[in-house]
Every structure is written in structure tokens, then in C-alpha cells.
Length: 95
Image 1 (cartoon, rainbow, N blue to C red):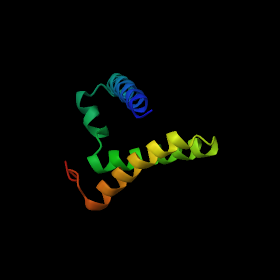
Image 2 (image 1 turned 120 degrees about the vertical axis):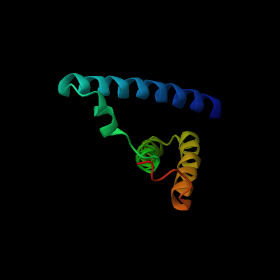
Image 3 (image 1 turned 180 degrees about the vertical axis):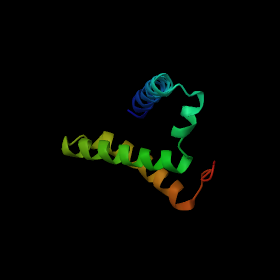
Image 4 (image 1 turned 45 degrees about the vertical axis):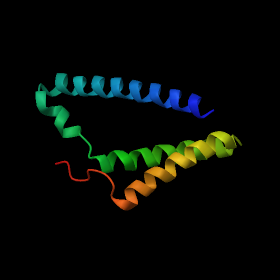
């Protein structure tokens, strides 16, 4: 189950990167700015907070569907990210 979850997450991350690139390209087309991509760069802390929100939403969905094994996998990932945020164990100020 863990391996399957990891494969799915990896594929989702790749797809998200493609969507992000398409988004930035569309912004460049609209505004004609090569540096518009820089305006949308998130710090690691912001990315982690976004990931926490995403995982909490998925966790709630799995719990409501009584898919507790999937929920347990997400909960462990969620706790690891929350711990990282609490410790400040990231490159918080990349600006």
C-alpha cells in the first residue's frame, strides 16, 4: 500500500509541475514578462503549508469514506510535515 501511495504521489507531483509550467507560460503570454515566473515562486515554508492543507483535505475525505489505511498513510506524512514546520527545519527565507 505504501509503495502504491508513493507511486501515485510521485505521478501527481510530476503532473503538478507540468501544470505549474503551463500556468507560468500562460502568464508570460499574457504579460510578456520573462520574469513573471519569479513573482509566483513560493518559499519552502509556503509550499509546506500548502502541502499540509492538501493532505488534511485528503485525510478528511479518506476518513469520511472509512478508508482508514489510506488515512493512516496520509496522517504519518502530515505529522512529518507539521513537525518540520514546528522545528523550522527548512530554508524559510529564500528571498
